[in-house]
Length: 188
Image 1 (tube, rainbow, N blue to C red):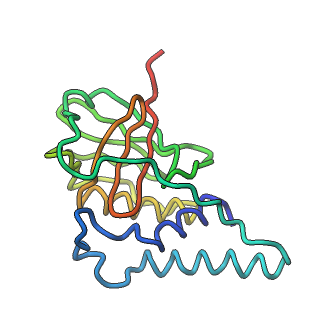
Image 2: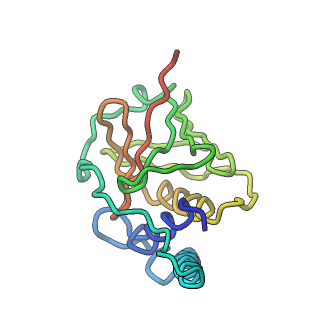
Image 3: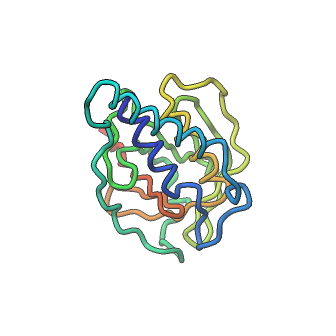
């Protein structure tokens, strides 16, 4: 199993479906298909390791970076517009994807980007909470199951709202126990 798939499966099993503000969003109150798939992916990694007589390929857990807990992050649509970011870590664990997922803030405060599929849609930023609905997207399955899980989580994150903050060139999107860490791509 690819390390990214295992990482995302574990992260999604351990609370990524929880909402922000301490309340579980309605879409995540029951066991979701994503959680079941994440459990199956993690179990497959254990089963493969047992068959090969090796340890499972689970990444070492690192503490997630500190992110402000709600409230106004000080970020504005004007500040974010024109910036492009690439996903570099989930909960402090570095991603090693062939093509890093991206997030772009465009004029009119539209967001776009790519995980496996490209997406675009209007965004809103209010009291440090970023939302984006509806998102238009291509709908092809990713070759890497972990990226499928990430896309599903990302859409839910933006639908329910993500706490957003920045530290230098690092952008954080947080929901529940999951923090996505993006790095700004600086203009040359």
